[in-house]
Length: 386
Image (cartoon, rainbow, N blue to C red; front, side, top):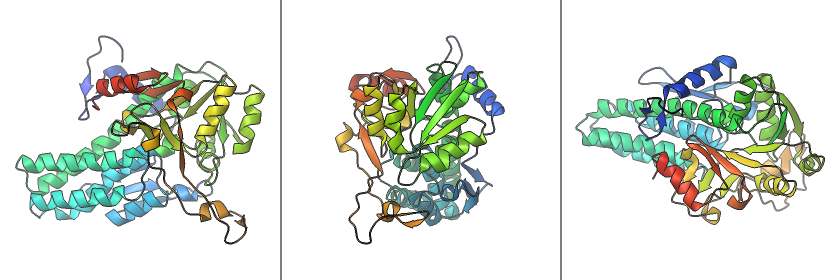
């Protein structure tokens, strides 16, 4: 934030000045990002989100009107990406209580807690999911404690969920503004999985600096790992970047080492699903290998993530729960079976990159260079997270 600019404080303690608001508006005027998720209507309302399981062949939108449908959408990856599922969880809690406006406030609060627990059980690794759901629970608890009736409590839930959506868009733009300063004109960036607009309510995390740099007139090219086994890099990153007119080249995961060895990469930008208190980073499976390659070849490795992705209750990467997904994601592809029937499968959805391999973490409160426990805690304090 520029010095001297008056700031606006959001509910979660982050401060955004007028310059940030202006840059947010400017960046979205530059490029029509896909809108991944939004609330439609008043109360009762519904959530409109793009079904990412059908990309890139079909751009189809779902209308989610109840809690279980939202949980299903999160579990089967119709909506995915840490910030996006945080917003989805916030909206999901609202869906779980919106029919209870005529009931006592205590009943609405109990239903919100139950809805949050139900949503949190859908996926274990991305901390934003629990953060988004619990944020709505905390708001309805405050409203009820203040004497609000059931109608006021439900309205407060929607108000808080909408604020979560808006703030994610603003934070994404801030990440882009800070991260773009790390990119020179003509830069080639390698990314893994999808951490763009499809993973957030705004312009993305790891891809937001690329959108910002291009908006500022820089030429930036992206190399996108395909990201086995679900091909988020191929199906999602390549789709949204090409849709936005960004220069993107798709490679298989096994080609990354060769690309690094030919010195065709200036920086690596990835997102995160959970960042431990010491700076260890959980992200899509394969990220750890990319970080090792980057270190071997002297390429800076940046993680781009909002403070909501940090988990101060998790001391280090060893304590991060890693989601194990269905064997069929590995044994079957678009052409059918890709392995013998009955073969054992290990399918972790995420891996952990140690903080020592991370050049820096781009957050909305600034760049954390060579992250460690003290630096992470300082950023969390400045952002009002601890």
